[in-house]
Amino acid sequence: MDICAFKSFYQKNLPIFKQRLSDLAKNWKDRILLELVFCLCTPQTSPLNADLASQKVVNLLQSKNDLHLKDIVRILENKNHYVRFHITKAKRILKMNENFLTIRDFLLQNNSVNEEREYLRSNVEGFSYKEASHFLRNIGRTGLAIIDRHIINFMADIVPNFPKSLSTRKKYIHAEEIVLSFCHKYNLNIDVFDLAVFMFKTGFFLK
Image (cartoon, rainbow, N blue to C red; front, side, top):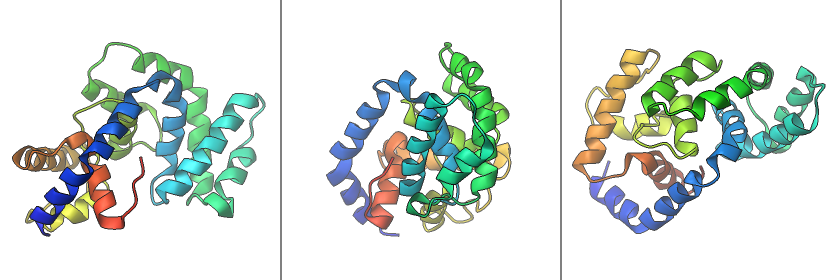
């Protein structure tokens, strides 16, 4: 991995990343449901498909009282914005929606970002530390590392023995400490690091 090339790319696109952070911090209370659904859809699914599908799911959740699993599955399995494991994810979305008011109320309290992440991981089925961190960044929270496969592959090229599996809290926190240290060393903003790596690797800019 050419760190100099990445840093040059990062600096060139930093205004875009900063604008994205500013946008995420606006009206975050109105986007809680949308971001929860989006982050439940993203695992092993194209971010673009997850974004399109989550918007349609939220429109359904907000407009229909008598919801059935098949209604959400129909959206997620649509070939125009296909979401992998759509039945499992539809079940998780329905369960989250049943508890949404409780989740939202917790997020409106004055808790630390780490407390919020632990709460989400424990109370939203389908949320690992990665999804919880992603969600929190998308509603304007700061200071957490979003360690997806792009970050793992990127860091593995730089840091010997960077963890390949983040299946436990201990492993994720250990990997997060490495990423935070890396960002500090190279003066990179952790809150946009995943966006920068994704764009550097793929050429696309997504949330």
